Image 1 (cartoon, helix red, strand yellow):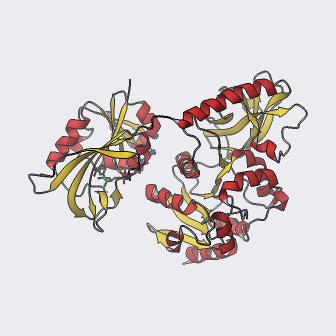
Image 2 (tube, rainbow, N blue to C red):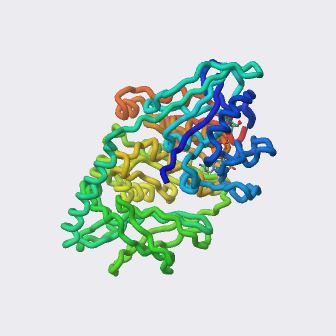
Image 3 (cartoon, rainbow, N blue to C red):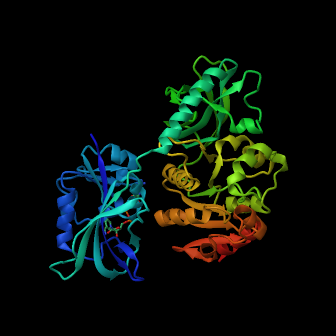
Length: 510
Ligand SMILES: NC(=O)c1ccc[n+]([C@@H]2O[C@H](COP(=O)([O-])OP(=O)(O)OC[C@H]3O[C@@H](n4cnc5c(N)ncnc54)[C@H](OP(=O)(O)O)[C@@H]3O)[C@@H](O)[C@H]2O)c1
């Protein structure tokens, strides 16, 4: 069945005159019966997908919305007691389980923002009115074009309103797909050629999980039969590692083989969840391919799922000094990185120790736009400098199947949201620097999940570092970092870890 996904919302003007106000304190701040009928006529017979807060805002007598399949997104599906609706914790799953031709994304702000990339059309009612609002409609990108607009109409209760329809332009050539298929063909031939002299081994990243669910992370690559697979590769070989896509992978935890067989994706990566009961602490994971006697060993860290606090930290320029434009980082890290030679950002280790103490041994993750190819070298840097030994989420630099490559912003947004989903009860401290995209990503994440953010900590780069990063000695995000708080969440910014630590202590003690 061909599914059509549409966004539908009504928007008025914020008090400052900007369009896009959709809600206030859990309600829509206007009432236009004609628009409700328009909404009902359009969505009947389809599936409506909504956030839990929008579900809560519906009057009892229309819950679930009649003649439509109702799906509610929540991190706690077990709390939705209504048996006539489907409560799920993943938007992708909601879309795949909608068994109607038309799928309607009906809000609120969080769901619109998450679903815009999947939608082809947007039905927008514009209301000519200024309101106080705390939630906004998503901003439609350049690829969205207005295809129709009704005349302005007068509601029977005096409000003026008008219907718009926007559609996303279809890009006729999908360059991502073309490049992906060229890469697939190249890899197929490359592997056929290389496998005569090489064996399948695995890069084992630091897998993680909670007491009943683990996320296994690794990558299948072809290594020379003479090379010890665990030894650190540096230089061009790290970037040119021949990945082994779409193969079966066997895994064992603490020596016990898993019943489930894993599979590598088209980049050779293993990234799979498995339900398993394990105690909090460090465990061992092993991966091996069919017919292989060699098992690649790595670590699996089990983190208490009810941990109250967690830290997500960037790497380059946040804990490692790079002084290098971001576009060259991957090459630099791979070619020149000797862990013992890299310089750690002054005082960051002390900042982490303080946070560790004050937040009672929080969960810790490194989320960076660096490629997975540099995992081993960065891991060695972390160990050599006594930074927390914790899971990393790095980036696959190759084409994604339908995109030429995943942008750093998309990668970080996805990675952070996935970690949030893994620890639904945890509040997070986001740590980054103002050299690249961290402040704007952390602001977007805060817009989406203010309740999940405890603090934002930003290391300010020096003028020289900023200049080397993007050829101007000024941070793009200066106005955001100057704020002391955003949505009541403290923003702590300073040049080094010692100053940041002092500011953190001041805030915690005040
Ligand atoms: N003007 C309009 O057309 C219109 C339409 C709809 C809504 N609204 C207004 O918008 C406001 C509500 O918007 P909102 O952004 O605050 O809330 P929302 O999007 O309706 O719901 C947010 C909740 O949905 C769940 N959720 C969000 N993303 C999720 C994901 N990726 N996976 C799993 N669960 C997810 C979480 O529920 P849990 O907390 O349970 O985990 C989250 O707290 C209200 O004022 C409402 O009246 C206006």
